[in-house]
Length: 267
Image (cartoon, rainbow, N blue to C red; front, top):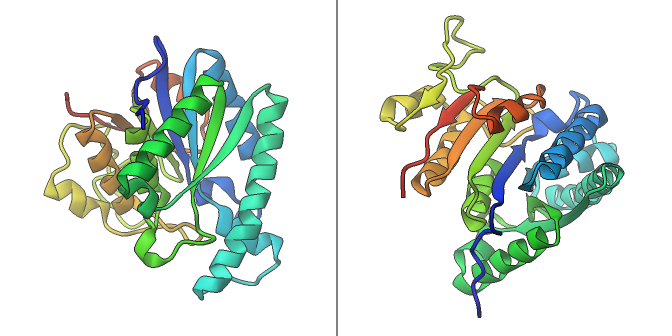
């Protein structure tokens, strides 16, 4: 089968990953104001001539809220049921918001067995290429409804880095609930300092990442370092920044210093 992994001529490609903590309120319900702003900014960026792919979290949390469950389910079957309901809710909102800004959105659900299998991997690359050639904004999530532990990435930070390599992206931007990567956990270390540029992911960087995550999300800074390793090895710059300030995406694409930049290796 023909492998279409060449970018459309004169196009730049970005992957944006948005986490559950950015997409939802503390109540677990979707933060529609943030989602609307995200759709508007990404649509505008696409209008500037970029190919845009969005990797989104939040399906299980949205399903928990929709089902009016008191807490995040602990059993696999309950989490998968919540994901099924939540994925429908997420895509309904995304489709409506992107449509009002004149953009088409599509859904791509992935698991590790798909991206690790050569035939399936080639098929998904071809699908991405075709959608992007049609001017669509693909919205990617892990297929939590059917996946089991052996088949999942477990966090969408890693999935976003894999997606960036699949489409040969120029840049991966991870939107989270802090301003970037610090030399320690800013919630515990009062004098923690933001590191603006990371040229090499050292053991000290990995230790500083720790394992802290939000209550509603599955990924902490450690998963973002794991994603950065994948991205930079493929020659893709990765930026971690605060998802509350979506206007900063313009500055990042203009090459200004925002959040923390992990420099992609020259390949």
